[in-house]
Length: 443
Ligand code: SF4
Image 1: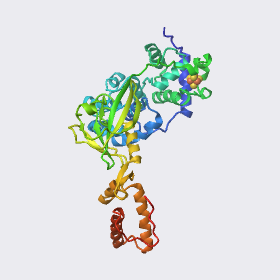
Image 2: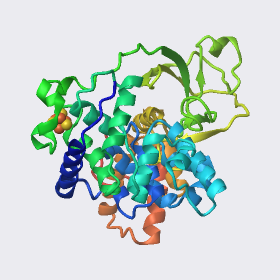
Image 3: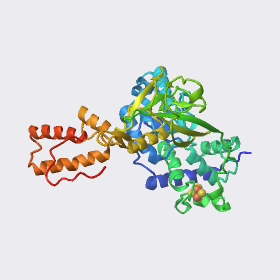
Image 4: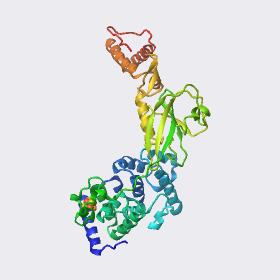
């Protein structure tokens, strides 16, 4: 049975909250500057299941590249995904993109105006539509995101399990009742701010709360218990084998996933459902030869509905890459923003950059390679591929001695030619013009 809220309680609530917002609300977040319905829409989608601190790193970059609904709608999804890579829940990026296309198609240069119209846009639910109306258009809009749910559930001591239909029904009724006709933007913002800053899930600051004197959870000693968590469902485990196909020159093979399922449209390591397929069937995407690939490590990633267990196998010899959307990702170079990879794959690529091994030209054995070419151009690239960190450090010391002993001016082209010749000799262990007193260290 839904109890009605007395008018004076509603007035108390709205007055206290608006006064708190005036002094303590957040006003300097990037999506609170130059506010448009579109900027609110983008920020709301990014903030779903994601911390503000994380979104801060993505929002401005995204808005700079796609400043309007039209710019987003005109871009292919392949261009959008790299700007989302790392935020997770990639379906949101697809839905945002679809939503932008829908709005342009249906409204041209206009925008949806009502709650009902916004809800029809792909990816926009009732709370996001309420946020766009309130924060983006300064019209009455009812918001019930996770922060608002927690605040209202505690204030009214709603004990139904979080996410249950009874819980949501009660909270929507409360949110509808409290939302005033006036101060739409400020009220929408304060509801989210209070949940995010004061009525936090861990260690709420009830001492700072502007509505503490009416809080039922506080009176009943239930603050830490509410909202009642959902019953935890055991998530199924999915085991996959992925191939780390690398070419020895700092590049790994990545294959683009289909537009549905996990990581839609993102580039990942080629993967197999079962290890036996590596041997028993020629694989569709990569046909490789040679010995059993070495085990490189295990990676676990939790999705909302299952746990992914990835076993990574290193492959350095292969015969062909089939007809799939693939690329060689140069992990040893600074990040390539045009390639969208999910964060677990990005983590591995970063680790590979640090632990990259090269068959060192000077010492004729595998040693840690340089993290990036020492200078631009083909010569820098060649050194990057054939020289270990150890050999390069050694050459730098040797080069310094050559310069000092021979009183060389590095700005002169004759010096540069001389040093380039010496470098080749040094790398080939040929006789070179060893300065006086130089003793090469043992490799
Ligand atoms: S008093 Fe504490 S629990 Fe109640 S609404 Fe305020 S911060 Fe939340």
